[in-house]
Image (cartoon, rainbow, N blue to C red; front, side):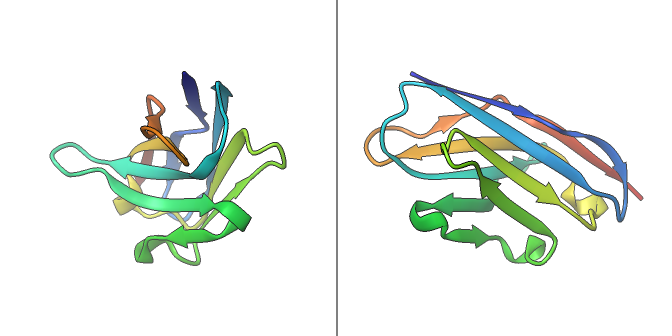
Length: 116
């Protein structure tokens, strides 16, 4: 089993910054990618950013240039630095771990609220 615990969410004014962290623990073997997704009520969960093997990154268009995903050398922590936040970034942010084999794992989420 793998556990993912997010932290760092909160309330911030538009234009501000937040840094999300995700700690992975448990039976972690070969990881294909880790990432961040977000969801607002009534809408589907959407990809925000992922970081894969070789530290290749992928971002949704609306966050490019504002968000940066990174991870530690042990690859058990993944971070999302969010700058120039906009009200439309308001959502619950979920950490995701995609193993090479097997099911994806999800954290319980952390709320990010950006006020205008």
